[in-house]
Image (cartoon, rainbow, N blue to C red; front, side):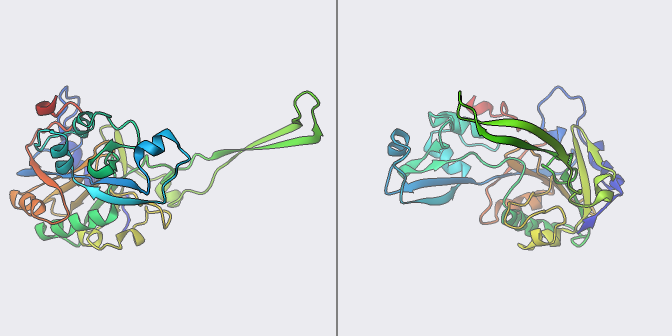
Length: 305
């Protein structure tokens, strides 16, 4: 994986997006023109206290449990739990509202004392991306060649404007009125660390799409199909932190495209009908086929309005 300054490799995507549309179609970020589309729902993480209950913690914050249990849940299972009509365009807001709490306190309640947080937006677990990529690699003639686009707005990832450092100097004497130490002098300075990926990338060209600017990298889908892909991705800055997953991925032959829009709680993939069927049949993925022109906005769930 390496930086790709030739952003013209991604201009075909912009040519297939809606611009200035008054609709809420997903095609403001997802290219038109594919035979079929899949919606991969981001997992929902749940937890419950050990040796205590949520009500006890709510009443007494010091009544801390002995530990926590954690598990993942599917959108479909929680929709069934709360009587939400399941369909490919269901929205998390519909499930949260049906729970009666709208996610306002430690997520929404589930069965058996579990509470579930809202799904991640714009990024997914790197292992989940690898699982998706293993399917995608079977549906391209160029699995070794392709592009990855990463949104430049991820905090400090590409451009650092610096941060302020303020130093206070005191006279070390307590003020009789307040008991505070008197401030004699204040020194402020702006510290600007070097660009994380180097000045060439920092100042380099961007793939400009409606409302978004991206940095391009060369990456075949087989590279992302390896669970250890974050170890080699140049945009992954620090070990131990959740790596940023790409906003866009496509192979050289453009057989499909993966879109991880930063405001979406699902990943959308356009490709062949066979690809969508293979994704739906993959264990560990929650996937539904969605039509071209689908509305994935918060108002798109008309069956549970």
